[in-house]
Image 1: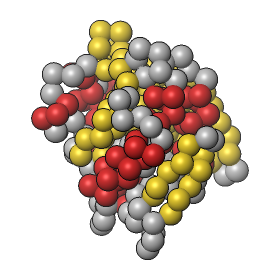
Image 2: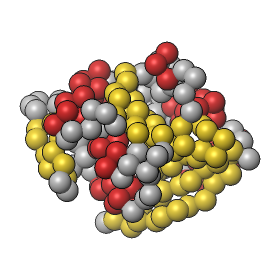
Image 3: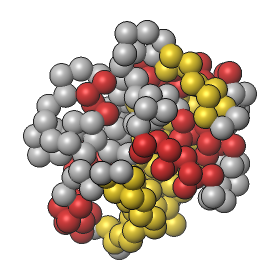
Length: 204
């Protein structure tokens, strides 16, 4: 966390600066990447919310998607731009600094898929790094995301969320229902002492 780190994932290279979520250090990134590698994304317009180093966007772009990579952390946005250049995706990925959907650069855009690995631990983040894990005392970040995402989904668009058994999954399902989504589990991944779920959510 005190120095710039250089990582290789598959055939791609990543610069990860201090305060930015390192995709090599957390199993959740491995799970998301594995899932995306098996998707058909040619021609899809993708929003990668909470992008961090841009790893989800890089792999989605490699499958043919056009991506908008969003993060609230300005250091993460700098990393995304660096990683876009070094992996030759300048025509496929745009980085945007934004608190969820608040940036004017996102207005009037619709997306086929919105990827999000939300912060699913309760508590107020004390710095930019903790924003990747803590979503507020009552997980308000998830509520804001679910409510606002509806305005940015294309008619056949859907949310692709990666969540963990470390959170109350039934509580997440309640939040999805209350904000007007139907959902299903696309993939379950048991890893050590934690289980990850990839969830598809669509507007009813």
